[in-house]
Structure formats: C-alpha cells, structure tokens
Length: 174
Ligand code: SF4
Ligand code: SF4
Image (cartoon, rainbow, N blue to C red; front, top):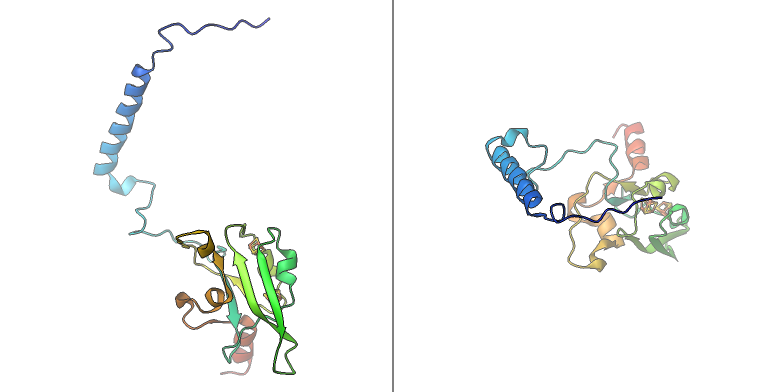
C-alpha cells in the first residue's frame, strides 16, 4: 500500500528555494565577471569555435576545372538521403558527352540531419560537406539551399573544385 503524503505548508512555500537559487546565480555571475578566462562558454559572435577537419557542415556542390557543375544528376545522393531533403531536377545537356545535369538542386537544411550519406553516395565527388556551420535566415525558405547557393555562395569564392579535377591537375603536374 502506498501512502500519499499531503504537502504541509512548509514544503509548499517556495520563496526560500527561489531566493537560494537567485543567490547562487548572482554569485556565479559575479565570479564569471572577474574570471572571464575560466568561463567554459564562447563569446559568440566575437569568438568562434574551431571545428575539426572531419566536421560535416554546410553542403557544397563542386565544380569542374571549366567552372561548370560536377553533378551528373544521377540521384544517388537523393536516394540515400534518410531525411528525404534533396530535390533534383535533371535535364539533357547540350554537350553530347555529358548525359545529363541538374537544372535544379535543392537541399532543405531544416530537415537535413547532417549525416554525410549524400557525400558518401556521390560517385563523382560532386557534393561535399564543408566546414561552414553558420546559416542564419529570416524565414523557413532561407534554409532551403538552391543550386546557386550550394555552388557559388560568396564564401566559396567562385566555386569549389572537385577532388577529381584536383587529382587530374596534380597528376598532370600543373
Ligand atoms: S547530410 Fe544526410 S540528411 Fe543531409 S542531405 Fe545529406 S544525406 Fe540527407
Ligand atoms: S551530387 Fe553526386 S550523387 Fe547527387 S545527383 Fe549529383 S552526381 Fe549524383
């Protein structure tokens, strides 16, 4: 048999606990003001955390040496995406040597779980997850990144060369 104890007036009086909590918070605030070097937090945005090289941040669509997009619209990234947040529309290319290319490539980063499966599924190093992680936006649509953002946003300085082209360049000694 369980006995439910009715709270007495003393235990239902919260003011003492509130005052104790506020005193603790105030004491820590004063301590932190005079011991800034010991604070475990970072004063963002003045200070930024340095992530390791394996950190998976914002997506990048890489480009070929001639500046055209590397993606061949094979859909492997979209098929492997567990969050179903990649949408690609393929089109025929004018160049007969290129089977198809994406006229639209969108990633809904609000649904993305940053697992990196898209990067691993891509057979031609066309999608990479880079070191950027700051993605401010004013509304939900700002977080749906289109092909322009993924390929040519200012931080990429005109596009990010595919590793295949980097290897070709390295092998040819350029
Ligand atoms: S990182 Fe994962 S969830 Fe995000 S787009 Fe790539 S496969 Fe999808
Ligand atoms: S990014 Fe890679 S996997 Fe995705 S459609 Fe383009 S070529 Fe295929």
